[in-house]
Image (tube, rainbow, N blue to C red; front, side, top):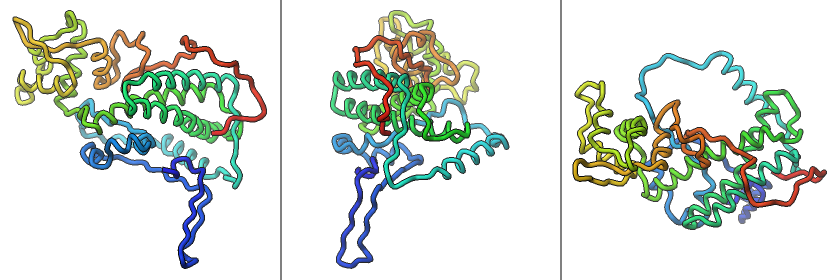
Length: 321
């Protein structure tokens, strides 16, 4: 828990001197993949209360198309880029004293606007868990910004101690909005409020998304969804109406039968959520949706109306990251 910030030293004292240690700035970073079922065994509600779960940024790797065979490999240009980046970051000089990187006045105002928007969302959150997640996302925004800043410095062969630009800050906050939606979805899965989508779920979600124009009074018949799911496919891959119904429930859609047919309630919010299962396409109404969706297009608008803040001026103190 304390290693997350890397600011508090670890002191280990034992009877024998060879077992005593002092680590001035401990920092533990974990990166990798994990199966959803295993993740559910590792985390529980107590990890939300303690703040432990909020120290992880999750990405859900949703498979939207079949994993067909491919011989594609990274190009030489990509390999050279990665080599330059890794070697460049590894060459950074780290001093014993804390380093401060200045932030431009415009970048600072952009961050404050984003930060305070999340602060209001956390204040009005429906539960403590949601508020806790948003608070951690706010703090992680600067960390991601610093990472992008250092990457830009290496690739552009510039001094990493230069001021952080507004362009870098905006890119970092866009990335954080994307990470936020993935993390929120993962938290719901871990707390058994949602399940990771199966291949059938993805197919049904894509069919519903394609039928957006046929939704009448927020309702779509199961039969029409089934028809499109099976359209053009070999009969071996057809889904029954019952299977489609189970997939719709797995996608957290509300079942509602009418006198002439069975069906499901499909709201604009549902379409927005299901758009995450559709590769390289977004729903027509996303242009005026303010919140991001998993893998959906999202433009961070700094002109959006927000509570008034004290004016920010550039100074010599810098902003610690």
